[in-house]
Image 1 (cartoon, rainbow, N blue to C red):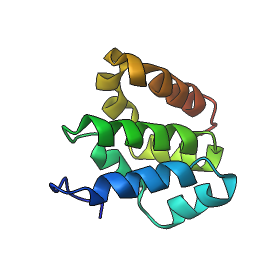
Image 2: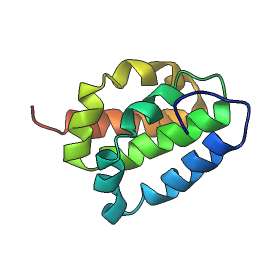
Image 3: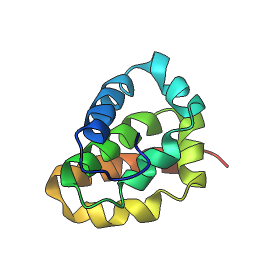
Image 4: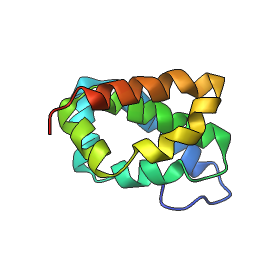
Length: 106
């Protein structure tokens, strides 16, 4: 559902639901187990600002879990966040993600 930027509301609704779930500790590991993290990171390449905003929020929420943060680093997320540092509404989330990723041990 998240794999391609189709002209529909489905990816946005799926991201909105996932953003809500990513706030809950119970669901964080389940989101990772479902294998959707690469698809969420792929959303950052879309030109849809609202979906990108949801994806950044999801990644931020997930990055508080050190096990998931390791996967975020492994998937080379940092370079994908750099363009969003110039967006005032997303810069705080991006810096939070980077801070959380710096806290993990390799």
